[in-house]
Image: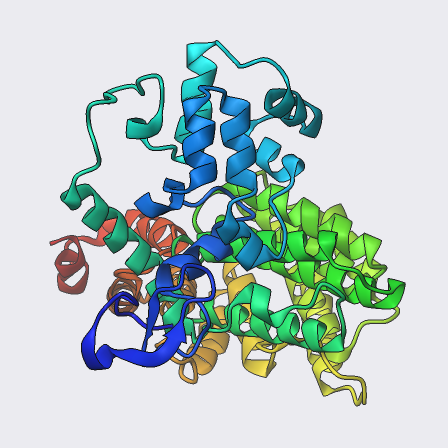
Length: 474
């Protein structure tokens, strides 16, 4: 997606290529079928109403609707706007509009076809949700007047915000417009497209924190849910599409967890669990339970029963990497619970699983699980269990091969190494490791590295007489 305005002139625009939604000339480096603004509109359309441009409301249907001073007629004009017809192939339905407004489908229908709503607070609420322009309304919005029109500066501010949101999509290379790629009658091409797109999104987590990715993942999941809900497909294909929803819900939950939004994370994990069960996918079911167990370790405390249930759900049919992932996460719960024997068995089981020969393809969501990952988890477990020598050996070996572009994760793992070094009375070395962790954590959109660094710093406080430690506090 171009990072320049599609409304530019000169050699920045193509000859004859225009946005399929609004008709604006497309930039020469924009290979998609939508301009930046319409790309953002269609991505967000199913999760919340996008802020439309000023010309969105300048249609005959809207003018007639506003003149009636009947909010129901305005809502109907909004649903049947030509841009929605171009982008989605049909009008927005009353159920979706109702979800935005906090109404049922029946209540929206009553609003559109019944007597005009007179309650001023309700009218203002609907107008603010849908970004209805003040100058067209028959009532004043809070802090605004019907005599005012949006300023050029306000429009530029909106454009800048839109640009920043679209730029993240451009960085990912996700220039294919969602609605142009997927067919109303879902086929294997649509399934492959969604699977590949989800895989690209998943790899963002290597380099960005949850604060950077949460809204993107949430928007993608909402779009996929909307597509699957309305597309026609056979039962087998529908099952595969629901599995993708389960994967995307897990991605979204993980981003929320990483951003410190634990209620949202739990909600998305539960949604992924429901979707995985609906699709009858034991591996995804086990992974959803493992996410829930992993979250509980850091919030309410280790839930051994839940961790064991996650592995049991997938054990029979799990591929080697899936088996290894669920075992290492179970090991982490055991370690925080203080069970050394169970931790050792689970970690050894993960190593054995990775060495197993199996011709079945692995799901993409375990692409990162390898022997180095198991060593890192081993080091973390030994740190939690108070076995610093084992922890230092495992973590130093694994982190020597760990890419520093994965800044959040490496920063996190270095804090476990620092704790193990403190436990083994290597305080100065722990200070050096903590300094590296701090450097990596700068600018990372995650709450977890800073929380763990704070814990290490608290332990180092009593050693401030040592120069490396003193330098950290300075």
